[in-house]
Figure (cartoon, rainbow, N blue to C red):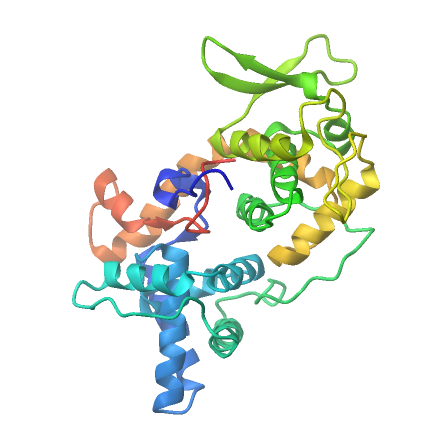
Length: 357
């Protein structure tokens, strides 16, 4: 891709974080971590398992947490799938080693291989499965919640459901990991569907001339007019979607016509309109890769609009709830904003996430 991916602290607001580190959650995480290690034989097997969990926690928390202090009970299937896809990348061992050294200033940077071996990755996957089992056994995870990175079967008749922002970030992240021209196209379509509230019919009917550049502000937006609407609205593209657009247009070209086009196996792009079936296949593919429960394409637009309608109403109650549940453990004044921020520390995932959707 044409730009580096930024760490979470620069990417999203605390309200969109995936993991909340209240003292209660850290305590539960420690219990789950300890129970998981007890399932391995003492000695080398247990040491290797602890090392694997430290690596996974470092990847997710950007070096803020070791395995012992990570809230493992908050881990979901799409988190696990995306974590494993990150550690499989070339260069991951050296990046993880730097994260571990950041967390522990007494640790010396060690020379590591260019990639984790298949055996190491399998060990990490096994640890994630054990963590999920122990979290469920301890009553920290409900039976209906997805546990680990199990591949999801494609479903042409996926039931309508609300999609979490964390799931959307996972879908976009796996799209951006695709080195073919489909990657930026899919990331842009998913981002526009969720953040702009565009349905499948809206996306496939967008043309290149729907893109607008404002010379005064330097911003790019999508001009969209819903059927029956009196006026068109302009959907501004944040930095991550702008980068995806640039990469997609570099492959598609600047020929007038549909903005989003199907791609052939030969990587050729014919400037013609995509179909709703192809959009459904796109969502099925990315949900399978990210470990996200299958969904209908229009769920993205509906979920994004629901999130916009309720986000302001939810922020204050969530903040108060975090303070009320955590303050007694600290013995502090629940009205202290500074203490509240320390208690309700949050981790964004993936740690390489681009700016907000």
